[in-house]
Image 1 (tube, rainbow, N blue to C red):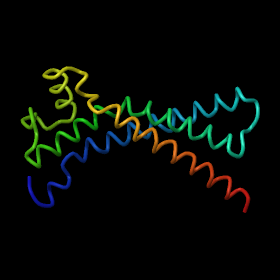
Image 2: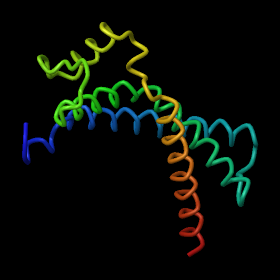
Image 3: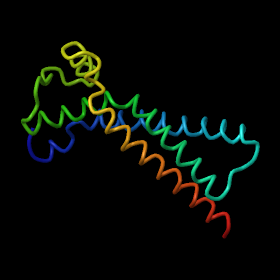
Image 4: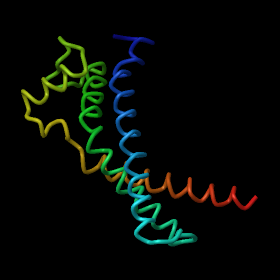
Length: 144
């Protein structure tokens, strides 16, 4: 695939990866936030509230990465096939689930979580910063 059509390579799996991550991330954050604030017994404000949001956002980001990592591995490999740098490609069967099964069968299920540490640190940090920024923005808007 060349030209404009190559831009859509891995689009399906990218959409699935993002849907999975966001679904798990926001649900996890909401559950953790609810539990933490119930245990505390009072609303946390100021720096302690922001620190809590960042901590919970980081945990939710890492947890969500546990679920979307296999999709990310498949997406990266599909894009590598287009650029000609793929090793052990499964291009004969383009379906996302078939590619996951092929990787698990030929390399073991652990291969679906290659790069997990780096991805989880990146996504956890992004989740922490994103939610802390969101909470800060809400606080500022409430003061208007």
